[in-house]
Image 1 (cartoon, one colour):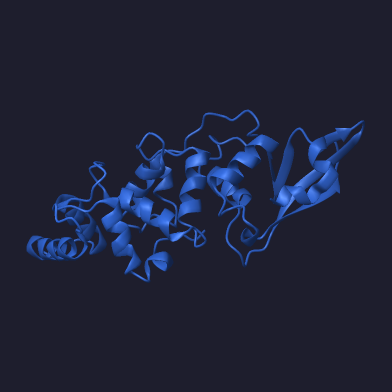
Image 2 (cartoon, helix red, strand yellow):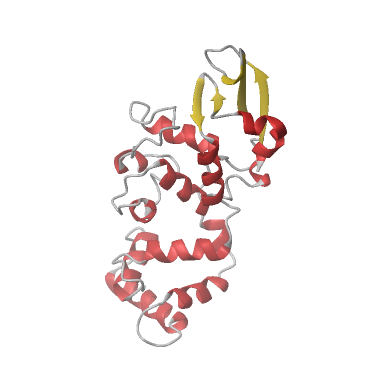
Length: 244
């Protein structure tokens, strides 16, 4: 964890202020540790995160002792993937009037789906609504910061295959019955082909998928069936991701 590089300073902070450009946000240590556990692919060493510590004026610093204030900020390597702080500011930029910069009080905030769906990373994705529904805690597409971080953690290039396969299964399970049935497949193929196939052609494709992937021949795909199918798709990891 990058904060451990601060050594003795770490236990002196009650909260840590992070700055990017002319913005500053504040998280507690407990929040940062929780985010690391929940979204390890965003806070791994490969995410390019390091920190700087400088003396700072009282107005923008974190009190350490007496009249000493420090400012801590992310120093990101842009050649690596996004880190939690970049994603927070991306989330805050979606609704600056709604999302506060101070998160120490764990504000109950959700960015509406209408704004999530307009993100450049999602707006042209035919599954944007399903993605938002699956990662939102109430299934309505409105996202908390935690939901937003979860989405980018799973969709990052560093997320493991099994995790990606699990969420891809949930996205393609349109009726949320824990199976991908013929109807789910028809919705999936229609979206993948952007409606360019006829109903008969869609049915033929779906029947072919079931013939090849339905291990127990019950007319639907279980998570296990889907995972076995993904193992035979070498391009899955490189295509099931979002860059920010």
